[in-house]
Length: 352
Image (cartoon, rainbow, N blue to C red; front, side, top):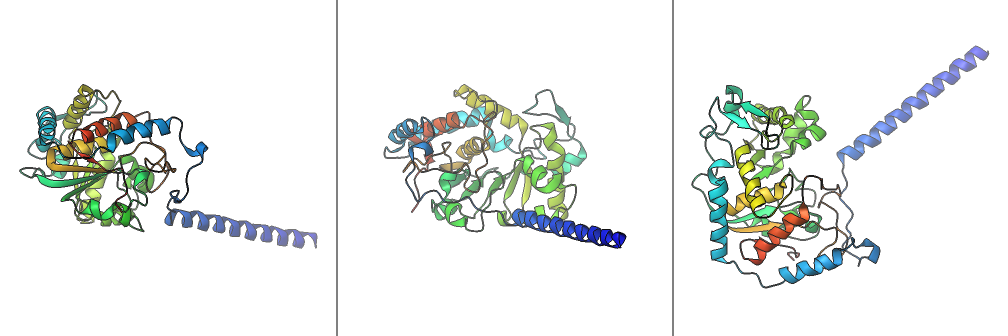
């Protein structure tokens, strides 16, 4: 009798354990599939404790510089663009092509100067044949950062009205974000950590990754395959995956020589950070490619410049920035200076 009770109890325990495991798995999968947008924090005035330390004074100084009536200063724009083009030549060197990077050429990684790679046929075959920027110049360009300042900004239509729209790090554009950030994409960058963290470095199922690219249409997908050695293989797999699944998006690769020359350029302009942010790199490219450059989502502080209400770090999440790599306030200060000089237009206000 005791043996039967013991056996019955054991079966019950195993059944309940299995049920709990299934329930936990279901809940975790559900959370992964349906990510939640950050809660809006624009609807109430901030408490003193919600304003970041020293931010009120800094933001007030930013407002003094920003609130002056903006007008493009053609002489300042041409002077800056010419200096940038002479030192960096983004038109010809920003992207690796079959013409500027032949088989046998030794690439020096811009993030690891001691690391090199000799171009073989496998890499050469996935390089774009022609420079997508050759003999092209756009009138207006939107460069869209991912700052929380874009949340509830209603800037989507204004962003999409540009001839060429640049986005950073495969940002979400659907599920309600369109109103604030738009949907049009001409070029989008991707940090390789996205491929490893979200898609298992593309060594398993690849369809979820391909499906995630649909919203970017036939835009250029700009990859930093030759910045660090850890990036190279996964970026190569990205190009193969896009080819295998016949995705319309067009993978291209940053030229490490261009990134190195751009870092030197900004050091000469007073920036002393370890690595430039993607946003500053794309703003720099846009200044060579476009007559009128508009920046959205570039705001490094946790409080809004108008109302001081609390902002999330990104418009889609509150994941903190890697401050060890990027000197965001220093970059922003330089971009604000270009704004006041009429070289580019920085948008900090809502677009309503």
